[in-house]
Amino acid sequence: MADPKATAEIKNGKLLSSRVTDKVTSKIEKGLMSSVAGIVVHQTGGASAQSALSSYEKGEAGAHFLVDTDGTIYQTARVDQKCWHVGNLRSRCYESKTCSAEELTAIKGILFKKGEAYSVRIRKLSEHESKKNVPDRYPGNSDSIGIELVAPFDKKKNAYAAVTEAQNQSLAWLVGTLQSALTLPDGRVHTHPEVSYKQASEASTAKWK
Amino acid sequence: MQAKLPGTALCLLLMACSGCADPTEGGKLADIKVTDHGSEPGGEFCSDFRLDDAQARSFFSRAMEIDTAQLHELDTLPCFVRGTASLLGKPATWIVRAGGTAEVSAESAQLLMACRECDDLLGGKTH
Image 1 (cartoon, one colour):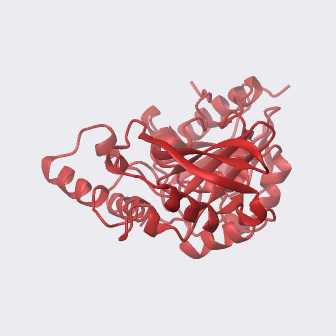
Image 2 (image 1 turned 45 degrees about the horizontal axis):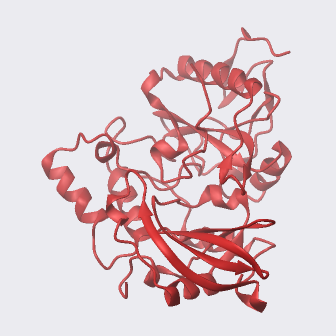
């Protein structure tokens, strides 16, 4: 059983701890991440850790950590490297209804632009958001750590499988450890659908507090 | 600056699916009819998303089957059009989302799909 009080330190972008297995692959690392502003929690949609690790070897999307259904934590990218794990960003002020009048006009101009495909509007909104700094926007690929929880997607129920108890225990340890090491406040940890337009059930049963 | 999955990567992502196939090919998906439309919370910007029967057929003729891991990489927008069809001769329901993803469900089979060249049907200029 994993030691809930296991210590950890970050060295050369790697989280060194008895609880973390090194599976870092440079193939999903997309350049230096000079600062970390948040953590985004995902679910894979695949049935096994191996299928996610194999997909990472193809070198496109991926996250920094992968937590298997039995709670095993794999580090798959260094925490000082960007990964493509978020995609297009939602507008934080639009979602929380806190935009200034001027900003709201700009965002509505993008989202409600007639004659433009919805997917293009979402991409342009993300580009608009990317010009802001966290916490005025959600953390994105350029400044967040991604944690993937292994979970199949049930096509019949159209939902991700529930996060296992072992995964939630590991997630809580990993999030707490990263928050301490990187000085991240609680409000900087999000599920994927909070920050991006994703299937609503993704990580909805994840608990890290 | 926000890095994201580039368009070329999205194309490769969709093309890489071993199960990729036009789901209307060979009558696999037929009798496609629209029944209703709607939006979920946060979908005000796309609540005008509509497809008629011909547009729905056009969508499915251009869409490719994807797997669940690929779904994770694509945007799932909160507005949809729903309908009925037959999948391999069996009654099925479907939902197309404004971002170009779709699900088809029959009693014994479910398909996930995505269309990367359907902007004209998904809010684009001819919509």
